[in-house]
Length: 132
Image (cartoon, rainbow, N blue to C red; front, side, top):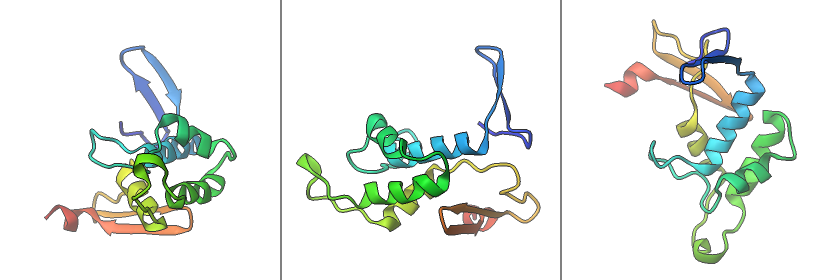
């Protein structure tokens, strides 16, 4: 769902309109990063479902709090049936890139340039070049 610069979202089914704050958007972004999304084809953090993702994010209120915890969850040794799987900070960053929904001002429709941050990582690319 694309949000206009006002960050207002209209839900046709309920007829309600609400505001998505940057912190709320970041919270759901990190939830998606951790959980993955089989419909969109990315796995997230192995063994981390909705409850595990929420537990990771409980200790913070902003991206600066959440991102170190997300990286830590990715790099934490896996147990049980996942014990042979290792994930890295780079895996966390890749999953965050895959789950990102761009926001107003992050995409330049004239040039195709995309720019945003994940924690202390700057992400930039040209969408037009990738689409070729």
